[in-house]
Image 1: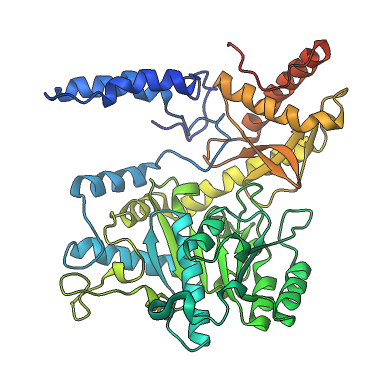
Image 2 (image 1 turned 180 degrees about the vertical axis):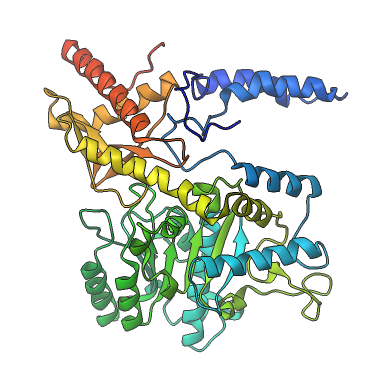
Length: 479
């Protein structure tokens, strides 16, 4: 089921448009487990009739909401093989081919992204886990510098664990907050750094913050996180300049490239990602831009020795004297699927040239949307896009500025209820914004502008309704 190529407009809804309660009622027969089993054909009918209408059609040109995509053909083949063989590839003994393939794939990816010869990578379930592991590795590194082993002594080894801090953009992903919580550091350990007009971290503010925190001895900044493609706006922080600052202050640099890293393979966009090879660790989610099935995430380290704190051995599993590679000594999962295979078969099928073209199309679509909105009197782009995301606001004449936040939320709700196209909503600089994301290569600037036209129509209807009586309060309307 894919419509990645160009074609006639698809009039089908993206999903049923049903409410959560209606969806639950439709799905109830699927979880009414019985003593006797059903014939497989009956199970298929239930799924097709009850579930599929409520799933989202990520491949449609009118889906502009999140980082999801249907599998690319080569990836779908690899995923089918991985599912049929159901290999656990944590170590050599359980799946010789699967374990070696993951190791070889990781090394090839290090070369593809221009990392150092001693770089290494591991496969994880999602970018959030990759970011969390990166913070742990950074903390282990700081403990080593303090003269103790974090794995043995834990946070108690630090003279004052409350001084430990992580600096990240104010637009950084929420997984970093999960990370400091899981490490036992608490939310106060995550210090936000201001962004500039393009939503990139301001390097001058980063430098001043580091000097202020460390100069006064108030905090021990053990990690700085650069985001290469922020979730809200797709902004790419200035990694090379941040690497300079981190080198001066002895801080670990992690790049959260879960969303954006692959766009560095597109020649016109490559300069944005200058300096990534200098980071200690880098995360990436191929299941976003590459059309590779979930789960599929990668954590890179610029030196394979940086993964050493993850290694655990036992008498029956990951034995230190075992022949062959054990991917499980580089990351937590002791059961992992053969997630590398769909990525390998996808790149083989498309070729690197095809991969670059797939990545380029949504970037060009968002750039086209931005340039068009610059000339629209009732739409305001909130930033110049770095990658495949643009946040904007509808600003119809006659709507007071104080009502614009509420209007964006209402436009989003109305589009969602109609179910024919989808964008998302976020907040930038304290203001509500509509957020257009292009992931599928089938998304074009024309398709994005059609969504803006729908938003314009709804804004007009909502504004007229409000002038006749308050109706921008979020009450659900019957379609």
